[in-house]
Structures are given as C-alpha cells and as structure tokens.
Image 1: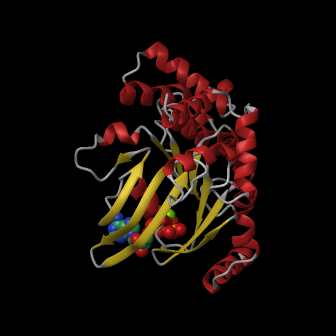
Image 2: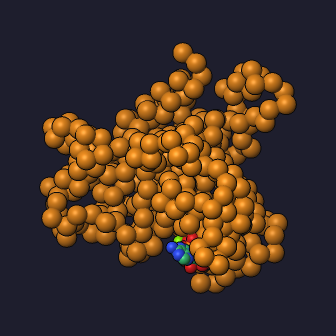
Length: 304
Ligand SMILES: Nc1ncnc2c1ncn2[C@@H]1O[C@H](COP(=O)(O)OP(=O)(O)OP(=O)(O)O)[C@@H](O)[C@H]1O
Ligand SMILES: [Mg+2]
C-alpha cells in the first residue's frame, strides 16, 4: 500500500466515525496542526525524505491546490491571481470585505464558477481538465451555503437520503441508513422525521451539513454558513463544524465568526480586491496583522 492509499483510507475512516470521537492519532495531528507550521510533522518526515531535500515539505498532502486563479465577470476582474493550498485535515478560514471575491473563490474550487485562468486540483483531480467527470469530482467536495436549500416537502432524513440516491445511486435502505448516520453526526437523529418547516434555522443548516457529509467528501467548503441565523442558533452550527474538524475533515470556511476562527482555524487568509493580502495562523493574523489593510478590516469588524 502506498502512502496516498494509506492517507485516503485514514480520511475515509475519519468520515465514518461519529463526530467528536477522535482517535489519539487524529487529535494529536489536530493539536499539532494548530501551533506548528505545516511541514514539520513527524509522520511526514519520511515522506519528505522520499521526495528529496529540494521539495517543499507538507504536513499532509494537499487536498485543494488552486494556483493563479483569475476570474473575470465581463469587465470586472474579481480574482487576481489567487493561490490557495489546503492540506489534508486543515481548516482554512477566509475573511475579507464584501465583494473581495471570497464566494467566487469557493465557487471556483468546485467549479460552480469556471476560473478565467489558473488551475484547481482537488484530491488529485484536475477540475479544469475537460476530460474530468465533474459530477464524480464534485462528490469529493461538499458545499454548505448561507441558505440551506432543503426540499420543504421532504423530511430531514429524506433530504439527506435524496442526495445519496440521486448522486450516488444508493438503494433506498442503504441511503436511509447512511443518511441517519450523517444526521447522528450533527446530533439531529431525533429530528429525522421532521420537515424543514418544523426545524429551526440552525437545525436546517445542520441537516444541510449532514446532506453534504453523507456523500463522504474529501473537503468541505462553507460559505457564510451561519450568517442567515439568529444569534442563538449560531452556536449549534459552529459546534457541528468544530466536531467535523476534530473528525479529520479538511475544511475551507468563509465566515464572519472571528471567535470561531481564532479557536478552530489552522490558518486565516485575508482577501481584499480579489487577492490574498495576508495569511497565517489566527493568533498572528488577528493578534499582529502585518498589513495595513488587514488591520483596517479587523478594526472595522471589531467596531461592528
Ligand atoms: N455572477 C456574477 N456576475 C457578475 N459579477 C459577479 C458575479 N458573482 C460575483 N460578482 C462580483 O464579483 C465580486 C466578488 O463577489 P463575491 O461574491 O465573490 O464577494 P464576497 O467576498 O463573497 O462578498 P460578500 O462578503 O458580500 O459575500 C463582486 O464585485 C460581485 O459583484
Ligand atoms: Mg460571499
């Protein structure tokens, strides 16, 4: 078995285990990930050694590798050469002013938007290659938006199972068993038979998260998952995300929840005007931002 088989097996294992029940190995990796620059894990040294001394060392192999992304909408040049590399199990938090291109960047990562130029690799698949089966590739990329987009005439279980049946062709019984397991992971098993109209906004968003994780993606993209929620409902969604992270999920999160970013992000990326201005560990970006634009943005957020 080669190293990548090994890692993807670990990833799958992570997805099937209930949230919050991390193995020692995984939680150790998570803790290390917070305080240490990527590239210095012990388990990676041998891999780096095999690759030779000149190759950059990565703690875990990149799951997302977007390079030189440009996006034009007519005359608007909204992404101006963005690089975003996300290592396995990393939680990268993207912040920036309205209109800076955060959503467009996320949408380029699963090709809901087609970049004007650049390259996007997800889990080793070239998303911009015409030969790539986009539907298959997109199953590796879960996405959660501000609006939950659940079908109102279907129960929570039905909504989650539908994706498994339609996208993965699972038979009803298997789809429902997996859907139930996904609902358990967001602590909503007891609401499986409820319709969206009978659930709070926070619960609906957790159903949307369950719908995404049921497909066992390799990376989850979140675009302002809590910004449509009443304040008292935000915590449950953030908790589900935190548990997802602890279970080893690779995540890219666009959000204004700076407290969550400080506590849970491995890396914070600050974007402005379609470019990455600054990035680093949360303690550095929030505590000692290097760039004047970052300081100005954080100052506005704090005053808001
Ligand atoms: N489909 C589109 N057609 C034309 N312009 C677009 C389209 N989508 C986004 N834009 C423009 O691209 C720019 C970046 O938008 P984007 O939604 O990525 O910003 P954002 O950082 O996510 O902002 P917000 O914080 O408000 O969500 C904006 O000027 C927006 O108006
Ligand atoms: Mg946006």
